[in-house]
Image (spheres, rainbow, N blue to C red):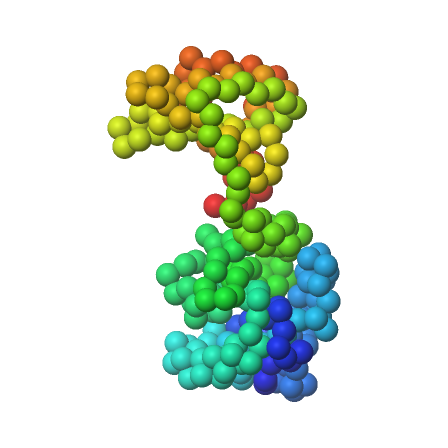
Length: 255
Ligand code: URA
């Protein structure tokens, strides 16, 4: 079963292998996993007709088993040709099998939703849509990945974030995010703060003098606040609420 969709195409979706329905119809993602995929695409504002969908393995493995390494290798030639023709800006790898083709060392549970670049293409590994059908507890994290897909891509594209450098600085705001950097000895090298996306200010330590940072915030945001608060001991931090994105990530099931 060949791929399906416009060529060239900005979006290329790569699944594992054709299923029973696809084997009969000749169209990839034409069965229950395809219906789920269409729903997930909608969460990212995408329609089926705007994407090129294909599979690593072009035939249904007997008994619907996982494709073997040699099946993946043999079909890899077709996949490579398709990739050259489609020339996608964004390649969505649906599950562990397509992930193993481009990023053999990674596991899908560790890297799903993360954007990375290879050549001219941004690759985004996602859980396979059939995972929702087999394990309803995956619905939350899978839907979260699709809902935030555009934002994840946009923030990857804006990676040249702007940093200001200040010797000492005070900030007050509703939400202020603070992060510290330490050297190999665990000594504070500086602290950065941000009150908006993609713009931060870095306040370095000078010699033995720690960063002169004064914060007055409704909500102070940190990642692993236990660590940063220990390092920033003695800094002038005033806040009503502390939000820790590491704990938040754990709560929503991110690694
Ligand atoms: N699962 C896949 O990975 N691909 C299909 O085409 C159908 C189900």
